[in-house]
Length: 162
Image 1 (tube, helix red, strand yellow):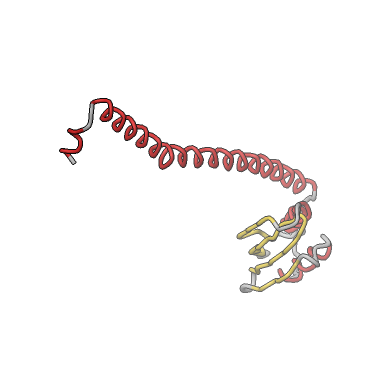
Image 2 (tube, helix red, strand yellow):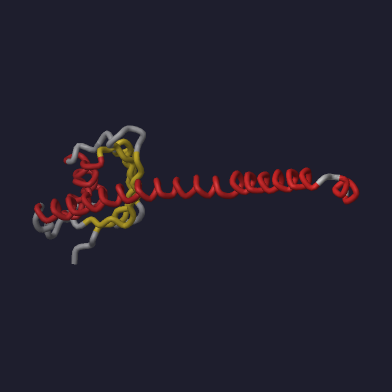
């Protein structure tokens, strides 16, 4: 290889060195810089989407707080079971079609699954649960395939009366 290199003229050597340099720059761009830029732009887009969702969630939280303040004081001495209260509030909120499963988890807890429910109705129903001294232990809400609808998995706990 060294003997071949020395047989080349200075002009040919410069052309080969320039071609190698250009090839290295091109490889650096394709293998490092372009993937970095693509990832950076995707992260910026996801961040903007998440900020939009955060703003919407904050507005929804303010609405929930506002609505929960309107409903009044929780009833005292309600002796109905947690299952009965949840069933009655689901019927009152017109969510019976969305309620897919209710599973008791002991005396004072139950899990509920709602599919394809309007988000506004879900939030309103959750506010009425507070009126009956039912607290949310865990709430998982995902977007449904249809716009404006969500799927929710909830674990509820009834507050025992003194």
